[in-house]
Image (cartoon, rainbow, N blue to C red; front, side):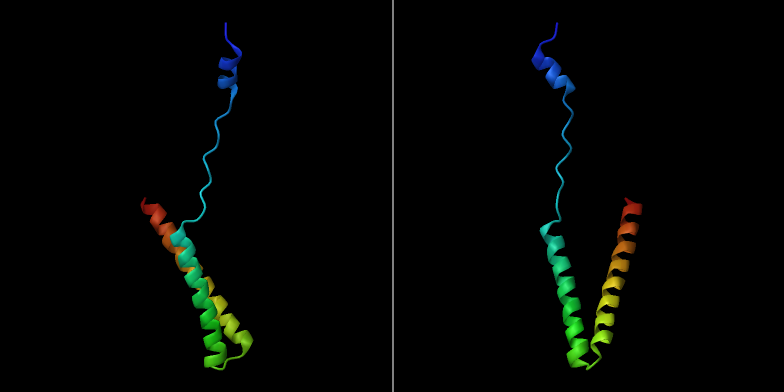
Length: 81
């Protein structure tokens, strides 16, 4: 004969693992990249005297290129693991 305590522990579902957020290093790297892209925008706009839309396009294009490089590097790293 089973007790209520035994059936309660048998029927309980396991808890999912805790979801981890981004590490401090990743936040610092992402912040540095965003800061660099903003600085590039202002340099292209004010220093190189480009049109605002052109300067924003350069900055956004550089950000997309960085994301592409990061994606290829991540795919390469995971395929070797």
